[in-house]
Image (cartoon, rainbow, N blue to C red; front, side, top):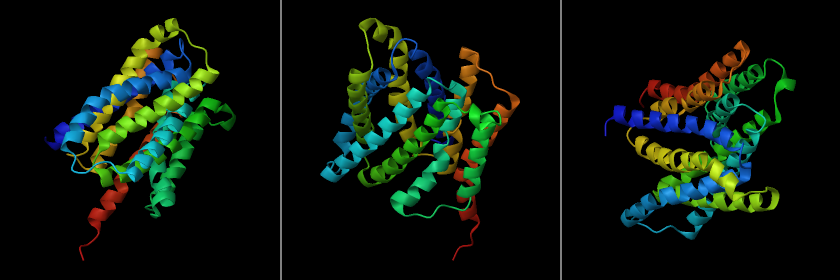
Length: 296
């Protein structure tokens, strides 16, 4: 596979994820957030399972007990991210959610300090400041205008950062990205369904009404897009992968405007632009500066 083909796969994954924000929002007209999460990731588990079986046949080593525990921990982080994002969508727009969720790109290096004891590149600090400024502009220049959903989505971005950090180190050890994907999906599904059974009413008609969104997000956003990401990142550079994957926010905002008629003031667009720039610089600048260092 060429690098161009790989980047196109990543772009397709980002587009699928962007559309997922719209599906997540419209589904809650019929079903509660935790039932949606639980059913979505149950479908995702089944969608990825054939790929897991194929991967297992080629695996050189079996999954150890330690790695299984890490898979479960990563699943809990995924549940935290999915839950805060989905509940947040009840009181924020798809546009805000898609851009604020993208802050995980800024949070990942910071989280790595605590988990991996790695000092972040200096660009992280101005990048974080840009991101926070972007959120401020997204609120219209008034922090009081930030909704509970916006704040929950910031928490969601932290959970995604934890999940990405742990998943990256674990997969590098095991070489089993699809096994990890299926396990984290299953853990998230079980946790969400357990919460939903206690706090949310549900009916067969509600599930049927939300079925198109559940199937889209479960099969495509979770199953297909994750597989595309895994394949694409093997044949391109991390910097280029970051550019194409971070376009998820742009797809989410564009589809929200096209399908849901969402709009925002000029300051909001400026905030989105600043957040998008922050996402790119924290991924691109470290790689560029390493290339310029003289060989020793």
